[in-house]
Image 1 (cartoon, helix red, strand yellow):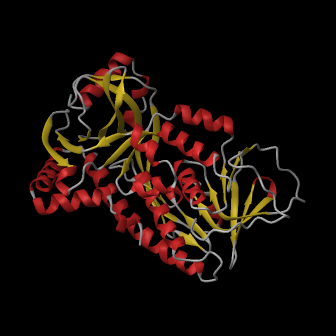
Image 2 (spheres, one colour; image 1 turned 135 degrees about the vertical axis):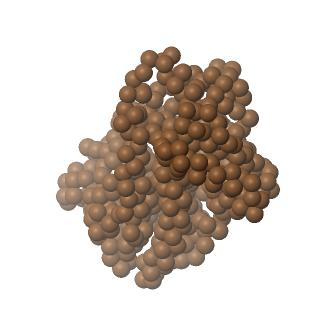
Image 3 (tube, one colour; image 1 turned 90 degrees about the horizontal axis):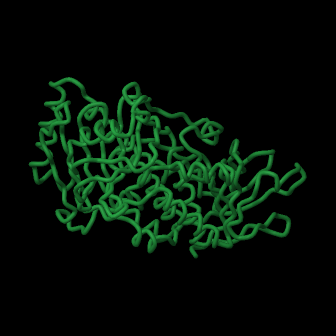
Length: 434
């Protein structure tokens, strides 16, 4: 426990540990307002991880999830994605109490290959990065989103100081000197010493605080699915740059006795719209060619998920006692495993802040604003880097492809560049905790 104290008194509503509350269970304007140390608005992976981490640290936490239990189950079952958790994530996963299970069920990422292709899926050059080059056994771990979400839900359900309200939506937040008041479905209110806005790229909280965003619609679609392949992946992640966007294979545990990988394929939206409906044999032939046959023949073994590719950055990461985290603060294309890992960085940074601050003090909002500026700068660096890589990967002209090839060869061949690039790619404890 790190200085947490219960703010719930006899006038407040107290619920059993981790119990999900149905939409019809709280009614009426006469209900007393609830109070807590930390309110997490959002039940995605980042919101659940923040809930588990701060709940495990001893804070009284309420998590509000817009999805009902039924719709959440449907969305989770339809999620074909996996997440590459980079090395600095381990501290937050340990804090959340789920690291031992992650370590047992994930696949290590020990090598990364970046392949430049010529526009017809023929390889121009290959740059290979080994974790041993920077004195690490691995770059991180890959795990399915379904499994990660299940771990977090189980952990939260066992915490007596955490409540989850499902089927609710936080409409707005009002900041005061010593608390923030969150108004959610039906006019109900929760007073929290700290609100973590994790309600997504179209955040109602961000809008209610008047925080603007910069960004662009890349006019690309990310297709996510799992495949079996002929040759073992050897704990290697492969990112292939051709045209339209990168095609990335990330190691998975063996399926049906054969080697498997998760695939994230970014393609121009116009070109991508008909791909999921291709006959399976045609689809398999297409993805085998697009992968440059690096692992031999590929065979689809899952549903195909599709998501629009956007880039977005909030112009402030905090307002009063409200901190913006995850896709409420920053949205990046699914390249280089930066998305959820940047969100985990938000949680780590805020945890460090709370270790060295008192939620009861009037100067807490000033400390939160300082933390927000540091997080925003770190996110901006990632935003620029991922945007540049995505643009380079989508180049169509031969001249621009040649520039990309020469740049990749230069990066791979200059030792003074390789190691800093690898360290920057995985992040460091100093990037996310200050």
